[in-house]
Image (cartoon, rainbow, N blue to C red; front, side, top):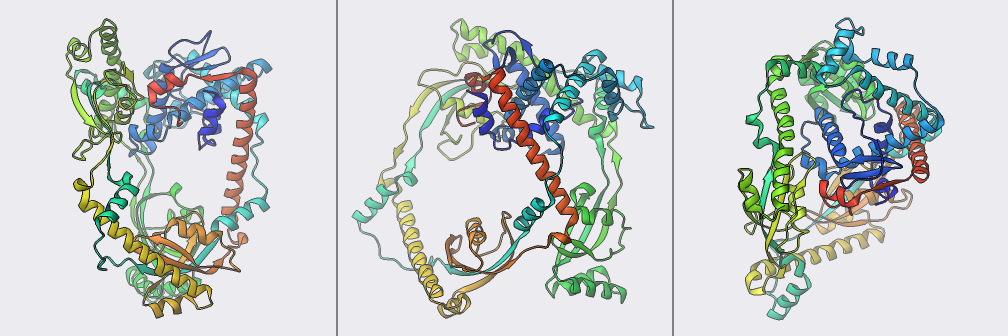
Length: 633
């Protein structure tokens, strides 16, 4: 698999620049070694190899960092989103840039390394100054010597220095940012006439020939999936955590090493009254001045079209710049002055304040213990995996290999989506579930997967025992479902014809509201639609809104689309183009973002050139064995 194919397949290519030049103060490892490729290597970058174990270790660290910011992200979701490609691209990019820096003689000085180490907050004392004792303690907790860590720092600085000569790190021209702002923040309004599906409509019963024809023409809806029966042996760290013993000294060292993760910023609860009409917000200020409570004022303005939003535990950096400083400068229960926001004018009240603080060791104790136990349990799987591999290589079957390590196998019957014949999900909650299901449906009958490892350090081997081919269920077996689907389809056809007739009337010159009223259809207003921001309005769908923004506002035509209630006939009625002069801060941020995107493209082009010069190959088979099929990467 060519590296450029892999690079092009990764839709979020912009992440590459960030991952390459970011100063990864913790967790990066010296992943490159010289020499020819080995069977366990994932990629070769010139003469430098990246092994499968190195990629797994780096991905585990990357995933931990991502989960510290997004705790709801599971390992299975991370694999489905192919986040391991980010890690591989980062490692390959680091190697390419490092090799080019060596060729050009670019390197960071000792003084630059010392300065970079000194500014890292992880190594500073309570006074915010570099503390050698803290530095050495943190490195010991990470099993790293100062020489090794400073070598990693030097590599990061060297790569950043070289890339700094390639990417200008300048914002995009203001005119370009303003043009993008007008496009992105343009708002459109429309009317939608809902033509409902009549589920009570009596339809004549279809004859047998009609039903048989419908059954065959829509065979995919009535076909049973292929089912496979397998024997599975799975090894997972969570099953071994109870055997791990950790001292309080171990846990305290881990807490100290990860101190920054436990810093919790100040959060606030807020109420917001928002309106596009500045005069209405000023009316709210007047009501407050007359002694009305914020709640009563909000109720009065809501009756006149304003909207109320209640948000809990909001952080300053999650708010638009135009309101963040104001909200975090307010006293509790004190209303703000009117504020202009990207969405109109607003009044704010702070309902709750939770000061910034650091989670104590006692609060984090159980979570740290669980994480460390899981990590160490993963290490013990290496021994068990080696035993199982030896057993299988010597001719033992899966059941015999399981007995050799004191584990049990399980029998499963499932389809390619991981559901059994009763529609129940199998292997529920397992982070490597997708790995296992995909591997099972790659097998030939009476063969096994061999021992495979996943990105979460679990391992499994599955044997395919039986296959039940996918077959069209006989009409007699699914008659009720076929009949119900047939009638639903017929009702939708009638609804579509009615919607098309309404659209024809509108095209002939009758306003949509008048035509819909005459036909007895409800009309809903679709106000404030923003490009590429899906609304949840009745009478609309993402495809409707895409079509609305694709239309020439000077010559709109009716849009006919299926919606959950039936069909909708939608007409564009208004267009509002924002004034960039009123959003200077947003334009500046957009210019910075566009400039960064340009730099990212430049760096990717630079790395593509280096790839041609140095040579990069990816071991598709090994990548597939680690993370599932790579052909769709």
